[in-house]
Length: 127
Figure 1 (spheres, rainbow, N blue to C red):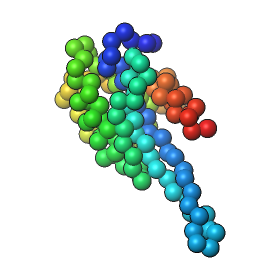
Figure 2: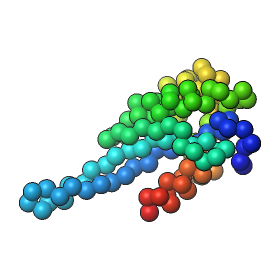
Figure 3: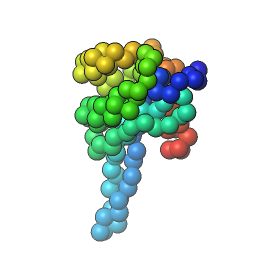
Figure 4: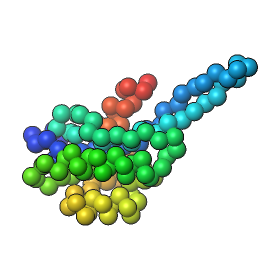
């Protein structure tokens, strides 16, 4: 499903990255960083993103606002595709999309059909 129009079909996902720090006495400290990113199906470009130290809604909502701004040039109905992760069914997220007349497409629980491009992209770069 590759659209022929930029900014019409967007997918998103939240990804956890682990990174490590060696303390003074050789102790390893594990840190986590969360990436919320939005990808355009048209050219596989990451349009917006946000990094947070905890999986917080404001990280996703911040990236969402950037994405809405960038994709506002699309004269066709925009569709945002995502899975049923913890943050996407949030009322603030759904309301913001509705306010901007953006169609929301969410796959069934336990599947990643709607955002498999993003899932595969991030998985191939993290592994």
